Length: 398
Image 1 (tube, one colour):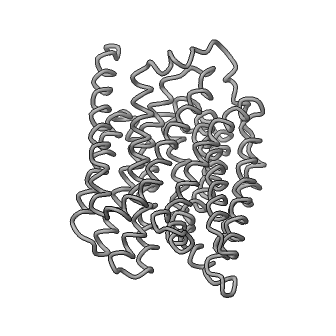
Image 2: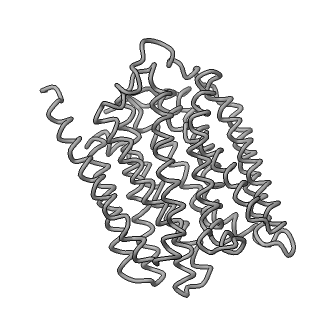
Image 3: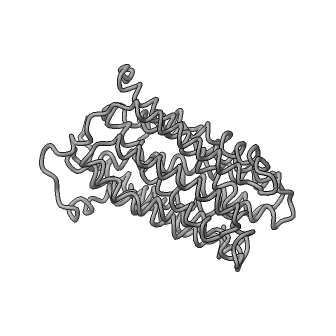
């Protein structure tokens, strides 16, 4: 049995988990509203998901400069800058809604995505705080902060809907900015060693690092799990309305989807410790395949609800499993380099998936969109089965 986490690291992990909860509440709020509001503001319905795509592109593009900044200045300055980008993105999105500016709304979401690009290093900072022996548990605790987001994000979207008379959802984005400000205050209390341990010892060239099959599979698996999740989730509010269900159906579906994404995090780390990251990733891909089956079985409220819960749980296993597997592939001197490549690759693919979601749904419909993810999931499942066998063969005999 692993020893409990010491008090000081636990305090840092708690701050990171709370900051993650606030950041994800802001992102989930946008996920619940952006496609619907995009459809209202965009000149072409096929561009409805462009604000969400801009958010994901912002995440991908921010990952590399965020890593460089943290390498030079430490984690905390990077995290604080990220929250400032989040505040700016919320204020710009609110103003764009007030002015009915689609372009401004897209740019605001790009800034919100940049905030997430910095915040995605919370889970790696948690590993540094907790130590390698507690890596899976620390990642799970930080990601579990998203359980709060499942309820707070969509609820704020509803509460803020009519705060500004005659301007729907402007108040929701102002409330979103308050979340980022609270995260800013929290992160001023974060005290981590410089991410540098990273500067100790020799670092292998990037080409040599990418030559590791385990590293490639960890990035590929996490990217596919995230891309499939975001593609289906982004299109779901459009599909719910397109199938004639009331707009009030969107909030509970997104809420329970986000619960599915983050609630398993309370035990995902323990499952990884017991069965290994590749096996948990495989279970995640099977659950994502199950989501497709449920999504294609009907278009009633319960079909959307159950499919999206399964989509969330599948993402959790695939993404946390991939992140944990990644931590086994680099030395301390290589961590920021590898993490940056991982974030850029994962969110680059996620950006493509998000942008494709609106176009696929608008041109071909809900069924085709779900069928399109099947080859991706099959490839990821085969890759993780292969790496599990390889790791088992190279493991030292006990």
